[in-house]
Length: 406
Image 1 (cartoon, rainbow, N blue to C red):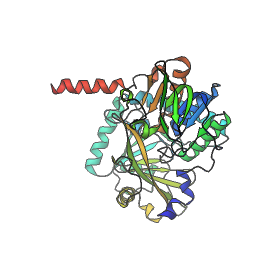
Image 2 (cartoon, one colour; image 1 turned 90 degrees about the vertical axis):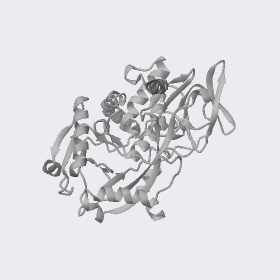
Image 3 (cartoon, rainbow, N blue to C red; image 1 turned 135 degrees about the horizontal axis):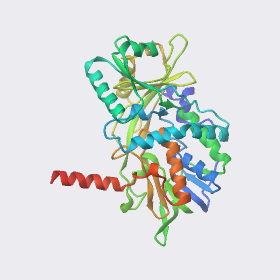
Image 4 (spheres, one colour; image 1 turned 90 degrees about the horizontal axis):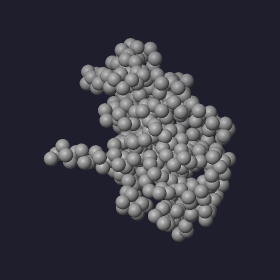
């Protein structure tokens, strides 16, 4: 197992380019808790506006969910019952991705393998086709671009799939990126913009003065800040990080994934392919990412035989060619999941902004989240597209359930 984890594709769980070593300063305009995708995207945006920004990370950059992700930008394929609140934000963020991509690649000098190939959601057998029909009906009612395909039409687009694939939905506007390349580009962009990144230092709590959050405590020292932004991913709901009255309904949801090495002989997919069990994403470097399990087991890290078996069997069921592909790496990570699988974006208290709980949509929602938080910090208010994602919605939901029971 160690050979797999330390092979070249293992770079997906570590970065080849690291920021210079930094110590916690005494003062900054903005202090950000968490150096994942969301934290660094916000840091870059705010530093572009001329603010001094310090990011404090309990581990290494991207070590929570950001480097474990597949990099899907798939609002159409992701749309499911109960996600009506999220869909407009997801579509808005996808619209912002090309500009975000261009600016990031210019600022960093790095490509991010942005691919606009769409997503193909497929089914085998009557039960799966019925569920797929339900999904397609929901997509059409929601105005999401999605095309129903017969089995033969699916295989015209993806000839390597098994002949028993019965039907599919093509979501042509979905896209994807390579998470490792995005995180490396964000590191370079943040460094060029003057962001200070402090790794391996856990934030212990907040500092307050006059009823306003005035900074944070880490490593026994205080960092004074005009604004503190909590973007700690799955750790955002940890006890002790926030006062009890500001506690967030965010928990870790573990996912295991693996990377397969494709060759000319094995061939590969031309776009993301989803099944009931797995999703498969081809990357520009020749790897095929297979993910991801969904395990509600707390911060229980590690890769299990059962998890890998489920991934391989789920992929082999529709793509026989994986039997000839070498496994380059296996890994696990923790999705930051809220009670309704949608993010929490708000000013939770004077001087404290929250941007967390993005579940499996962190990459999709990164541009909109960064822009929304930048507007909140700079102008004192969220833009229309980001309204409605505060903690109050959870209280309203619980009250509604209570009335229904009564």
